[in-house]
Structure formats: C-alpha cells, structure tokens
Amino acid sequence: MVNKQTIYCPVSEDRVDNNVTRIIALMVLLIAITGSVLNNYWVFVYLAFDFAVRAFFKGKGSLLKWIGQQIVKLLKIAPKPINAAPRKFAAALGFVFSVLIALLIFNGSITASYIINGMLAVCAFMESFLGFCVGCYLYTFFIIPFIKNPA
Image (cartoon, rainbow, N blue to C red; front, side):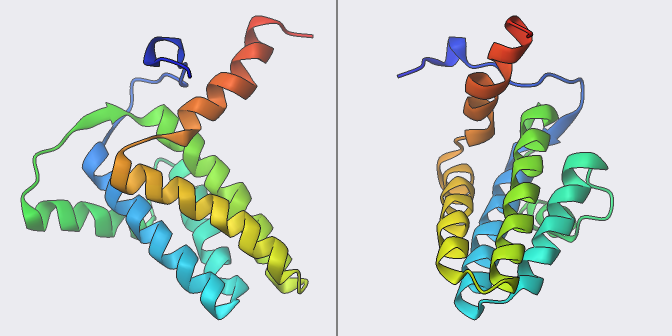
C-alpha cells in the first residue's frame, strides 16, 4: 500500500472547495447510473461536456459545479479549499470515460459500456462518500515515472 507521502498530484495555485467537488461527484454517480439504466448515450455526452468544462476551462459553464456551489451555499457549509489540479486531472479522466461510454452505447456495445461506467461510478462514489481521489493515485503511478525518467 502506498502512503500519502509518496502520492504526487499535479500542483497549481488554484483552489476549489472540497465540499463542492464531493457534491459534484455524487451528481456524477447518480447521472452515470441513470445513463446506464436508460442506455442513453446523450447522458454521457452531457457528462463529457461537463467534465471537459471543469477540466479544461476552470469550470465556467459547468452546470454540475454551479449546482454544487448552490447546495453548499444553501446548507451554509464552510469552505474547505484544496488544490484544484488533482480534481482537474480527475475531470479529464472523467471526460475520457464519458466519451468512451457514449461511443460504446451508440455502437451497441452495452456490456462494455457497463464495465467502463462501473469504473466511473466507483471513482465518483469514492470521491463523494470517502473523499478519496483516484486521480492522485493514477497520476502517481502513470505520469510521475515518465516525468522522472523521460524517454
């Protein structure tokens, strides 16, 4: 098992509210389940769009981010600022997963879409309910070795 001292995440000066990211993860989980039940690729096209906005455009235009912010305000939850870069990395992975799921459903590969969507749902569940960022671990194991030992 890897301890927290060996986990590397992309670093930036940008901060996001951890409460908002966990609410967004819950919404992603619910939307992903709904999309699978309905076998509707448009649900995943929307998720891909929202992930892309959060990963590549600082979240401006993300309906899920806006709803999350409104819920935090409504419930008067104190902000918990965290580094935005790991969450952007996770959103980029969510974008890739969502595009892949949409394409699989569109092409009639329902079983494969369930498998990929299951992975997305597990990641969203872990972030929402456990506060565990899978993106940080993926970054550590797949990206850092390339940075330390470029070809």
